[in-house]
Image 1: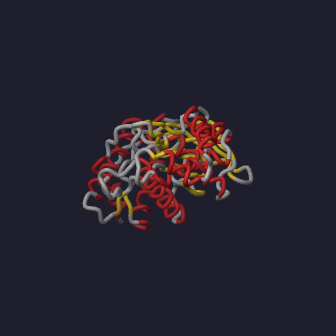
Image 2: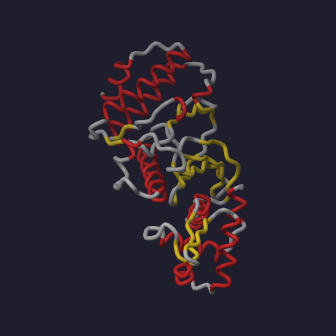
Image 3: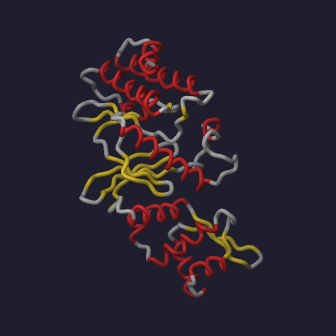
Length: 291
């Protein structure tokens, strides 16, 4: 289902029901119907119709145990609450087509107030097997943290990193705002590096990417920790390499920070050497970052 159209189909009461389920989700995997009724003050007859609609739209999932009905949010239901939050904050006005899918995210194009084109990133932590468990545990306090909380923390971290990096003039998308698990940023008109775009000066592009890692390390005090050709966008007009996907960053005082920084640099050196025949040593790039 188109997320934007799904959102337009909702009424204020629909959103109130989703909000009630969210509020009780920290205590219940499936929230009992009577608690939703108590929180929304919608009579059971009307509430049942609303929940039937939300279930049909795949925004909630129903479970009946011993005759008692209960409900939980799906990711789509959580999407609706995040979009509503962004609209209320005056960060987002419209949502368009999906333009990208990552390991743990989906990216849509959108419009901010004033007709400004933006990228809207939905974090999907837990949707697929999370292969960065070791890193995940550095920012998720409990091993069994729910997917709601994990995605929310990831979005908050992404926004924070982008805000601090953009203030230091690093080549990253400028963040506009976030709500729950959704981050809205500047839309970068470009092509992903993994698509191997033709570059007039690939060595210059490489060192600009390294400079962003330098700013991250020296000025902001963080290491990307998951860098590859898949999260670098080459801007079309000036070949500037914008580095994206920052929620998994670690602080420079993290015990694994140097190992992760070296891995980031090795990925870049290997890619530019193989694809663009750029001859740069890993140690030279690391020296540039570390100063």
